Amino acid sequence: MNELTDPFVKMLDAYKAAVLAKDVDAFVALYDDDVHVFDMWGAWSLRGVEPWRNMASGWFSSLGSERVIVEVKDAQSTLAGDLAVGHAFLTYTAVSAEGKELRSLSNRITAALKRTSGAWKVIHEHTSAPVDPESLKAILQYSSGD
Image (cartoon, rainbow, N blue to C red; front, side):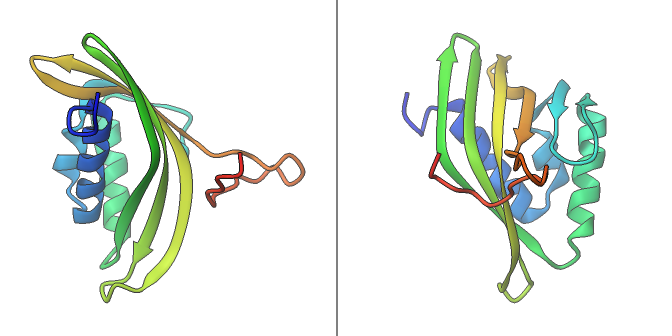
């Protein structure tokens, strides 16, 4: 499977574009109606596309004139019939309307996709970051030293 046919990589490309454009509809279109998300922020779990839409709406509207560039590293996936499972490291960089880098953070993503009626949709997504054992704080800067 190459990057042009890999449903996980194609989903990540569409995810990056939707986040950059702050396009809630394009973002939500990547997910199954019954998606189950273990997001890193705020809630243990979100079930269904509407709570996920609410999260995206709140995130994108909180940015004001800022945009977020998503960089993907080390995307890998496995395809088995109508199921695909992938994982990658994502770095989110907020930039001002003038293009100045404001802040960034990284996390890990694992996603399971299912092909239904010819379309690949995320049915489960899990994001996380390692936790420093001494401070118990999330490590939000990517390090390839692992």
